[in-house]
Length: 346
Image 1: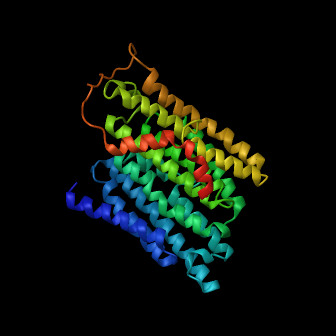
Image 2 (image 1 turned 30 degrees about the vertical axis):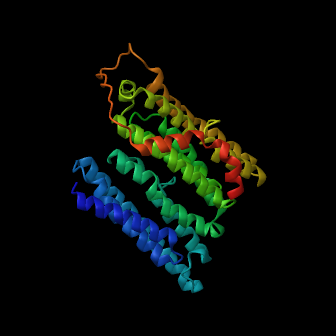
Image 3 (image 1 turned 60 degrees about the vertical axis):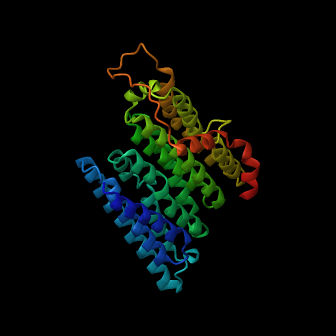
């Protein structure tokens, strides 16, 4: 890809995200989302592979539909209330339409259909952007409108997302699709607590972004696209394989790793709100995700030769690891002792 085009796309991506997360008017938020959509399309289709072109087409159509719905919802609200302020979402129809529009942008169930396919057609770096930065503006809109949203609808979508993300991830052999369904399951955790403690939604998103970024960077470093090739990457950078296993277990939410913190706080808050059944259901559904994280970790670290894979072992490399990989992996493993500070902030 042309360096100037890549620079323009990256700058536009940061600009669109900044506009949306800092705006309090529906029109400026919508403009930021549109800039984001147009900026990421060249990055998805830059390989000129038919699958990449298909992914960019699906992404464009889905995001255009969501943006139209969001604009329609804000116009209905302005028509009835005279308010364009994002926090003043009062009309029931506007609340419903905006929930649907933001859910489509995030990939929440039942609007998840586009997300795994788009990730499968993109490069690892673009997948990292789609799974993290591109979800920040819609999450911010959810955060700002959270007092107006229907808690029953959000809880239903959250449970469905956690269930489908877990079930569909079990049968995947492509690492990008595994992480796509992992993202859908984590969105369920973020959505379920939105009405009761929006700050906790943001904390969960930040920690999820950090951990997922570490995993994508590791997979990008080892050039791993399939489960069968995960088994052969241990020879390339052996210490990174161990870190990869710990990061996966952190994403699964096992103590004493960082990923346990948001799940612990969410279950605690749901119990305080006397939603014990909901907390139990989503906790049990997270075990599905734990299975495919353990499978990935098993393939990466426990499957050693002699084995029956037909893939050639990779040469060990002395190429320096991306510094971001080191930072994100360290944070995604060792942040649990800072939980009292997080509790104070939230």
